[in-house]
Amino acid sequence: MARVLVPLAQGCEELEAATITDLLTRAGVEVVTAGLDDQPVKASKGLTLLPDTTLDAVVDESFDMIVLPGADYLDQDPRIHRLLQRLAGEGGYTAAICAAPKVLASAGLLEGRSATSYPGVLDGMDLPGVDVNLRPVIADGKVITSRGPGTAMDFALALIEALEGKAKRDEVEAGLVR
Image (cartoon, rainbow, N blue to C red; front, side, top):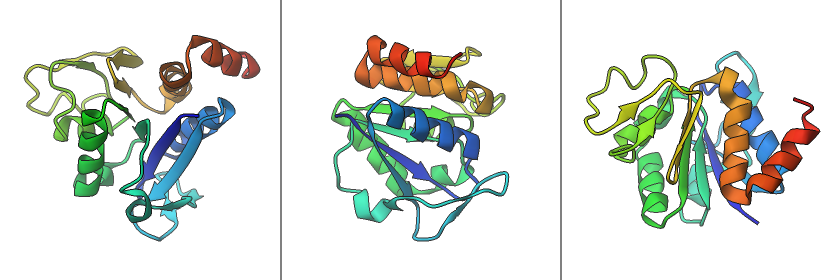
């Protein structure tokens, strides 16, 4: 069974966090949500999220994928950069939606790739060698990016396909009555 880490920062986009964790769980993926500290996470629209654990508690554990919901604070945490770089070096998947592709860029993981983000997030960065695109979801090798809350379901389905294959994605999608 695949294992995925979803770091949750204060101000994260709750629709993205919930959609990612819900759909991956429906696919039989083990999802671990981790707060940057031991406090409940106050999401962008006021919802309070309770992470499974803290980032410090899982920083040395193995994951097949790290998925970043949109949150500005993730880019300010060097532990996130180290985790992303380590997993990418081990051949694992890194994924981000909304403002979080900026974290992948800051960690040096978008070089030579196509990526998307919330409008304007990547445009303002000096990213030579990165093809910033407007598609809703972009899977480029082991890096998957998406635009924002409106693309969260398609993003989560792409994550399932990457980890568990097209048949599992189709099974989960059929249950969503899309």
